[in-house]
Image (cartoon, rainbow, N blue to C red; front, side):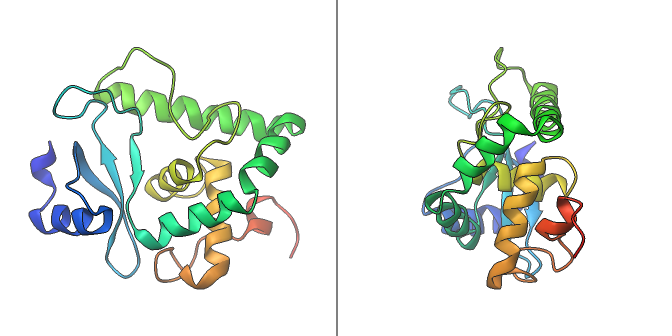
Length: 175
């Protein structure tokens, strides 16, 4: 399946990661400026090692932004909201189940671990951002919010689509 990924894309991802990518099935998201941003990865690496992270963030601009948000306490705030907002918790659980089903369609790892902390907490914004960018808005509510936060920086129209919804739009708030 990885033969569907061009050598040029694999070389670009290798340059982004600073190492050879492993288990790449496809470029799951390409930024508006054409760079690979997220790869879809096999549930098991070529050496047989389980790799539950189906969507892996590769664009250094996005990985730096995910790290910035994590350092700023965004994960803690999101996790706190999961404990008090039943609609958000239900949508996040649905995202977890969708992620798990998609990965298991490729190959089951015999676990319900998906990544990013789903479905009970937020542990890694890199995974949530990758999931949202790969699937588009409306699948992973907290990944969508993290992408919207990133879009408030200079990344809109470069690493993030210009039409990505704002936080207010995602939360159904009036502008």
